[in-house]
Image (cartoon, rainbow, N blue to C red; front, side):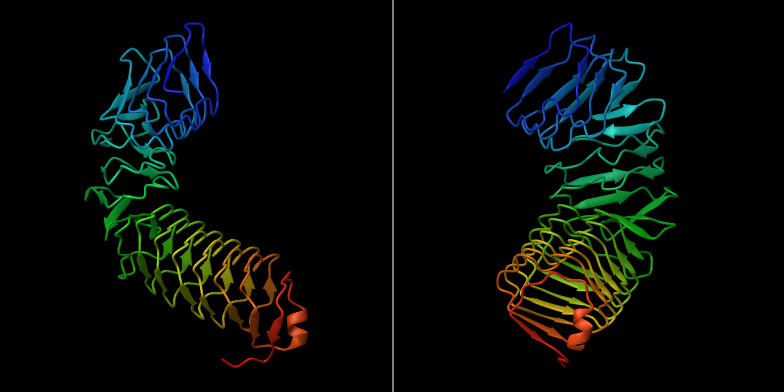
Length: 350
């Protein structure tokens, strides 16, 4: 499907209407359409421009998710609910940027104070973005899948956020909410947590050092960083969230320090190159599917501090033949686990 001209009798474009129409290049939305649903044009990779008529009064989230070649977004000047500026689609009254594109420049005139979490998701062509001083709210996972994002800059006058080392940081909470493919996480104490989906989809990221000041790694923080080969986790981290490193298929080894107490579900799922895992002596729980599909893993040492292992934590680890456990057989029997491994060595001293 390459082009669409909607009938004048059309009133609604429902959720997911043109989802995955990857060859769609043009669509004409007639005056009379009042609503566009969630993810209506998701993954329309060939779509380069779109015009929103004045009749539109409702637009769902994620409308242009994955439209990596979208350059121009315009809204009719007669539309009372939305307007466009610098190729940004903005809900006028709430001052919310609800959808951007690869050529967007976020207005700094006060017309935008918040950015929806789906506004810039999966824009491969987006390389840099500047957050002006007027923005005080940014949705979680805002740049998920922006694999080539290199530079994030925040206006020095912004009181809610700042940037350092090409990281977007919420100043008060000390949470890193967006990272780039070349980010260096500050080690000066200005970052204590890595937020959910902060580096999600940065497929060009090759290495990262998490400083000792960081105490938590959030949900899907490094999800699908497929080129990530080296990770250093600082000695301040206490928790690794669900899906934190899922599908980091180039990661070969990981050392989890003694400070960590919990490894979330799916945390290292799909890390197909992972050969060596060192689990620190502070870990008490390993979540379900935590190491599922780690097909290169041949052995693992589990300390006796671990009291809970979730179901299928090591499922489909087809080369895993030996588990070294520092506790007793009786302790092992008390752990909740579904694991089919031929050789378990108890009271192991590494």
